[in-house]
Amino acid sequence: MNNLANQRDRAETMEQPRRAAFGLPDVWGWDPFRNFFSNMPTAAGLDITRTDNGYAVEIPVAGYRPDDINITLENGVLQVSGKTEKRSFTRSFVLPDEIDAENIDAKVENGLLTLTLNLLPKAKPKKISIKSSS
Image 1 (cartoon, rainbow, N blue to C red):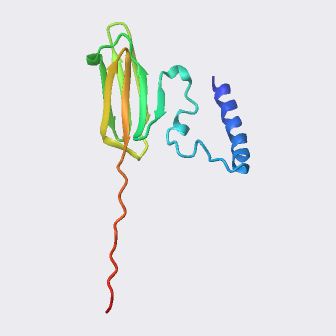
Image 2 (cartoon, rainbow, N blue to C red; image 1 turned 180 degrees about the vertical axis):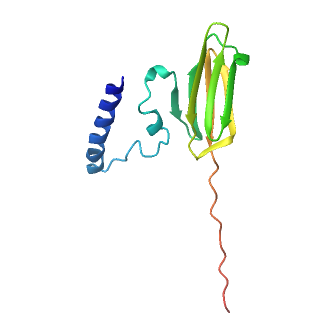
Image 3 (tube, rainbow, N blue to C red; image 1 turned 180 degrees about the horizontal axis):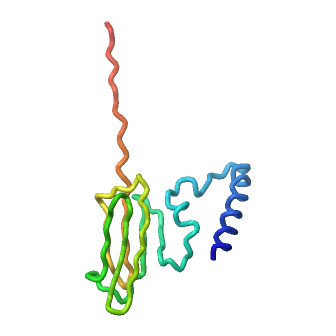
């Protein structure tokens, strides 16, 4: 699996100069999760999607009730774990600084846990008035 991840990284590295030559944006440059998840095998069970307001993280939790699942945030690390009598899982990842840690939503529907990670509101520029000396 690591070999596959290395091949993907090499292909993306070779693709970036070609994209720049044609004036195309670096698609991966804006994504703070890319470096963390690039070497993670897809079997890890995480699906991360960029949304207008931040990110949606989907984790399959079929067979787990909401009471079986525990989500904690400590020192910027989000940890999702679940435990039943027969099985358990744990997924942990570091949140980028741009995520609003106070407004993380979680819901379970049809065996899928969806975490909504909203971005921090951007500071609005302050208008500074100019005074005339006359």
